[in-house]
Amino acid sequence: MAYYHGAKASKQATTVSTPVTADSSIHLIVGTAPAHTVGGTVNEPILAYSYAEAVQAMGYSEDWKNYDICEEIYASFRLYQNGPIVMVNVLDPAKHLTGESTEDMTLAAGVTDLPFEALVDSVVVRGYNGEEELTEDYGRGIDYDLIYTDGVLRLERIEGGKITSDTAKLNIKFNAVDPSKVTKADVIGGYDTATKKSKGFELVDSVFPKYRVIPTLFLAPNFSHDSEVAAIMAAKAENINGLFVGKAIIDVDTTEATTYTEAVEWKNKNNITQPSELLAWPMLTLGGKLYHYSTHLAGSMSATDANEDLGKGTPCESASNKTLQIDGMALADGTEVLLDLTKANYLNSQGIITGLNLMGGYVSWGNETACYPANTDVTDYFYCVSRMFGWVANSVILSVWNKVDRKLNRRLIESVVQSLNLWLNGLMAEEVILGGRIEFLEEENTDTDLMAGIAHFHIYLTPPSPAKELDFVLEYDVSYLENLFAA
Image (cartoon, rainbow, N blue to C red; front, side, top):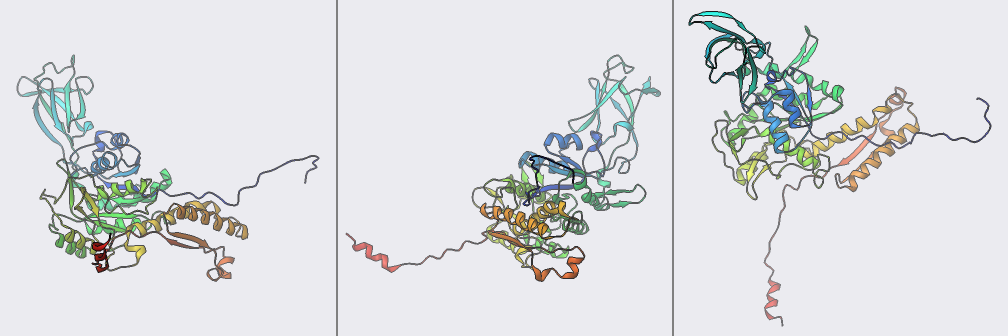
């Protein structure tokens, strides 16, 4: 030790550390977007905190049958004021194409419109010398401009260029993206050994390393009704980065299941029975727009989590009986769906979430995951309880990760136990949980495990169940007849 003469002080790290809480409901959607209109990316997770940010990255169209990411952008940011969301566009302008076409088009007031799907870089414009003979190509930015607007790719003549008339006849060749050519294989994705890149839902594991956020609600509105896509979504939700857990929100196919009883048959036929799956029927409407239930359920869950009186930043509160931003329910063909309480409850009893318009407008109705009624473990079938277990697990992993590979001694064990017990006590004080504690038990930690550097901690946790049934018994009390004779 070096020689020292005098007084001094030093700082020691606090034994009890502040836990890191995981995000409870960040959406991840894999689908199609008009990213070609904004020079957007393909098969890359994009994080957006606002509507403008999402549209800038993915483009926007009201044609949600072709561009389901746009439905999620609108529902999440405009209707439920949520964010951030993670988007993966699988519509590839280099792969999903209609093929080149050539058309003669005549300008009207100096403009003409190409399809919204047309690719700017593929456009070749030529003019006519007289009626039949084609002249040299016209130049973009010199003779004409191209801009995506109002659901079209608009070509506009530039004053002073070679296109001298506002009513000129043009010969236009172009290629276009074709969203209908996107298949479930594109959405499921995988690892491409040629490009050494992941695609589709395989990109789930890229989100946390890239953005340091954990997506825990998975969506694929135009594709989740496919049983294989649903199975992959569920599997990915159960094992995010080999560490974290989430939920997959699945839409029943309303072209096949046109009644509430058929929805149950559809569920059983497609084997949607996992605790990590939330299954919803039918579709929803608002202002003439048709929505998948999944985008509204995800939005409502996030809004409920964020509510300071309900979720308090956690998934402890069920989104059931919470307002949906809708004015009706329908099938894919627009046929109106009306459900009374008996029918809605039957769907719930079979592990299907639906909507109900009984008191005060439309609400989401149902607390059960798709594993119900086959699985009656409360930590699996009540989705708010299941999500709380997942959220606590995710938060614990984030909190103790910096302790991995430190000396396994009494100080480390006490630090973990004290820190997490303080956090659990705080959750209990806020009534987010009914109770919780963590213990380091001798009977769960064998000598061989401790020698190998493996320490087992036991967390006891009781989130509140949703008040699914409030039962009141009314009885005629004869004794109150005495009040007839009271003074």
